[in-house]
Length: 181
Image (cartoon, rainbow, N blue to C red; front, side):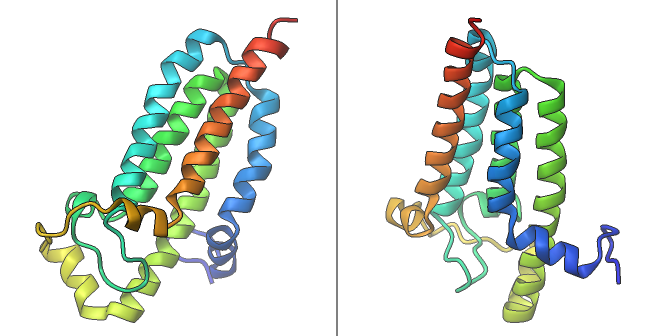
């Protein structure tokens, strides 16, 4: 049965579960269609870095699956990792300098992030019940917890950093060597 997104529950589960693997597949298509230049990379890289910075900040506050996180960027937005991913995607789209790439990235982000958010919220409501509803509806936050680099690493944010660096380096490579011909 479709949910509010119009996707059947099985599709939501599929896109939430396989979003990283799908990202690699779409990444190949994006690289093939990209038309980066030095200027587009210079324009897009800071946006991508800003997105990844939000992700690192969020990961440094998150105790995944153990609590409803209410500190750091979670004080302002319920899904800062996905917000950071979206900003990172915009940066890569700018760096790629291609309308089809921007459309692919936008479609990927809308579909997979919507599915991930739905899946995550269902988990949080099931496991943390009232604590999650209170967080979402009352805005009670934790101002005491500080950012922890070790927590960000425990949440494996280094993988997202590595992915962003590799994506930007591949665009630099394409602009330098492929675009020169």
